[in-house]
Length: 625
Image: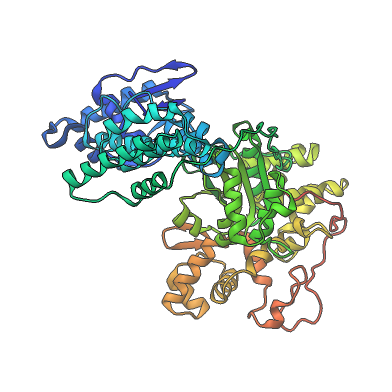
């Protein structure tokens, strides 16, 4: 769908122009388009449409206009016009407005001097007449004036680009009527002087300066601006040097199209609502934060959506695992940027050294490109911030166990929360992974899903345990997992830290502030829901510290918010919390997460397993955190 506001308002879909109805309906659409992907209150719309003379039935009339407009734009799966308190929101994807194309071309023109004139000429061709032509209302008139100013600024930029290539008589002919239509726009007068000067018409250029100076002094009482005076000095300096002979343009080389997405996770189950929400968020904001607890399947969800949407990004897909939660060191933003710039075709010598310069060069390289960036496993907002592109043509999907509130607050990102799988999807995943034995024992499969807290990571490891011991009945595995002390021991693949529930939880725990870690351990031992008052009692903290610790745990997805002010943790988190030492002394922090020591213990914490069950040694894929 294409929305055209640079001229009379038009909407095109599949090559056909849609009927937009009467003036009120068209003005309503224009107001929503000018505030695309943001809620516009009903009161504001009524004020814009009817002003002080709004009839008592205005709210009902507005609903009627919305209903007609909604039918025009389409309802159902691809519904664009949504009701959102206290008004309405129009969903517009990046690049669907003609203004978006203008802004993209203008950005590219600033970084590509050789093509600037052609790019700006293309941008100016998007105007079909005065913007929002024929629409009334204060907002529409103000926006039309702003867009006209934008058009003139781009026109002046294009003339500057033409002058840098050498003045021509055609440029003089173009500028002469422009200065008559805009008699006090000094930049146009300066450009006309330079164009005349470049065509060896110094006398005419000096006459132009005298004419505009006289007008400024007489009508405004001011002297010419610095740009006009500078042009005057250039004319007085004598004939312009002859332009360098034109060279054949360099051969055009196609920029590399990166395709860095890892393979999708096989046997992906459910998540239809999250996939749909991710599509809406990326269309509206351009940057999405996929957030959830360890092992919930954030990466799997992001990659599933990325593969489904890859046709929307013909200029490529970039991917990096930032290692924010894992056994190694997090990836510095500079290292990620160097990798991206190399994938975009820059040689090692062309890649800047400093982080700020790398980030600026990256924004330059991706300007105007339709790229998808998947920034996986981010640890904190500052790790992501330098990687954000500066153009709306790019889409960013970031996954993290942290809520990354800084990206949401300062950069307009929107969060997509990923919860544990619904029971039906968890059972379906186990049946696919285990096979016939699961179909033969549905009660054990259902119990197994709940014992794994319906976390995809735990479900996949449990299925691996079951398939590695084909002679063991599922009931035995269920009984073993029902013992809290055995559960974390069983849910791991030996030798692979990414396939261990305990390891995964440890990476989140180690990043917690001191008080938050204290509350986490106390909450595991208490085994009940928490509020601020109970946290004060079990953790020995003051009211403010307890409230802050609960917020930090919720932001890190180490506690679930079950109601306003009330928190809980799932069983696997509780098992992990119970196994932790009672303090966070330096000695306790040095203990390996897979060998947790209890107070007073002098050997690794282990539990016996029932006969026939053993730790799996097969390698499993990293399943999406």
